[in-house]
Length: 275
View 1 (cartoon, rainbow, N blue to C red):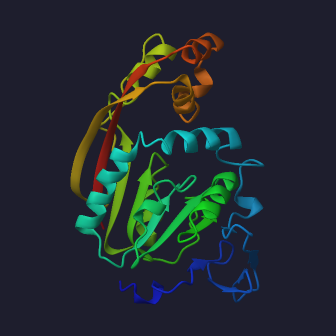
View 2: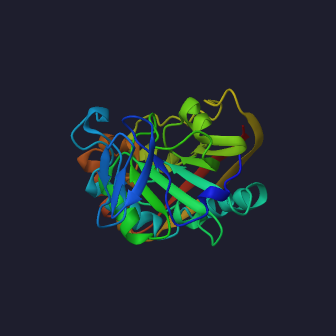
């Protein structure tokens, strides 16, 4: 697939209701069947029809988003971003059309933007997309579900997913021929020290589970490093952005609040696939 038609400042979406292309005119996205979606003042567009929702406000809430943003902006996961960008620069074409599946507040999304590419981010949480669009004006953000992506077939040459649900059939649909999919999943030791405070028998992550079946695995690498926190706020923010935050007892939270230093392992598995 050639992506020359996507190099302009015009974002390319398809209607989530009828699958026809959407055109942006005067801050309104409209398809030939006259389905309309307003562009928010922050610059994003909500392409998640109410019938696609499984709850009133799906995705992360504002408290979780705030905690994750504060943690990520401290640079604790920057080595992961650097590893992702190294693969992107090695394998992707300079003018790649990039998609961050489950973009959250745009931390990973915007770091893939350069002068020649287009970068899109989709998340089911309106709160996170609003923050992303307000901060990172050079990327295109939308509210949507990963199971029904608001994009045309073979639109992207580079798709990546960091800790988000990996839906191979839909990712494969929007990925161009010979395009790449990069997945980031937890390694066995990821945050084990933190989990050990919460669970009596903290389990290692299962590294062997691979959900991609139809694409070719091009490269797999592990990124492991120690994170040291010198205040309890960073540790509490880390806890708040994890799935096991809801399992933490009041006593554990109090214990973390009193910490002056804490060390924890970051352990990531990066797998690069080609269509």
